[in-house]
Image (cartoon, rainbow, N blue to C red; front, side):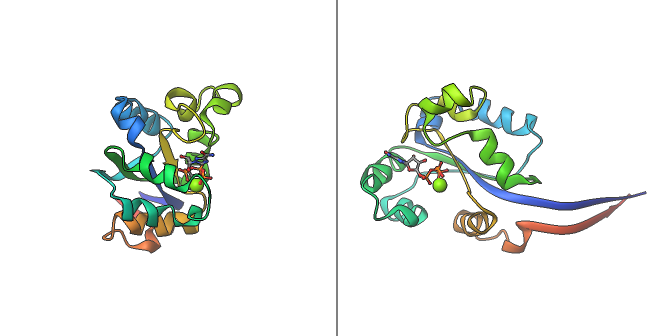
Amino acid sequence: PSVRCLGKERTLAMIKPDGVSGNYTEEIKRLIVEAGFDIVKERLTQLDKETASTFYDEHSSRSFFPHLVSYMTSGPVVVMVLEKRDAVSDWRGLIGPTDAQKAKISHPHSIRALCGKDSQRNCVHGSDSTSSAEREIHFFFKDVVSDHVKQESREEFS
Ligand code: RTP
Ligand code: MG
C-alpha cells in the first residue's frame, strides 16, 4: 500500500546555553518526540559573537541585543531541525511565551516554564514563521535544502 504524507513542515529548534548547562537536553528531546516531532538533524555547537549577532539580526537595534549576544555565546547550544505537520506553530506552542516567568503562570506545561528563568534566559528557541524557519535551517544546516521546509506531497511505497 502507499502512504501519503501531506504538508509536513520543518522548523529550527535550539536548546540555548542555559538549557544545555542545566542538563535539560535529554528531557527537552523527550518532550519533542512525545509531541510527535521527528528530529531530522541535530548538532551541538558553540556560537561565536558574529554567528549569534547574525542569527538574531532582527533584534540588532534593541537595547537587550548586547545581553542577548553574550547570553547566546555563554556556552554550547544544541540546534535541531524538527519535522511534523504544522511544525513551526506547534513548536512555538510547545516552548511557550518568551518570558519564562509568565510561561510558568499561563503555560505551566511549556518547555520555557519547565527550564527557563526570565525574559532572556528562556532555554529554547523556535522559528517564528515558515520563512524564518527556512532562513534559520539554512543558517545552521547548509546541506538541508530549503524547499524541504514545506514538503507539499510525498509518497512512500512498501
Ligand atoms: P526566540 O527568537 O529565541 O525563539 O525567542 P522569541 O521569538 O520568543 O522572542 P524574541 O522577541 O525573538 O527575542 C529573542 C530572544 O531575545 C531575548 N530577549 N531578551 N527584554 C529582554 O531582556 C529580552 N527580550 C528578549 C530572549 O532570549 C528571547 O528569546
Ligand atoms: Mg524570535
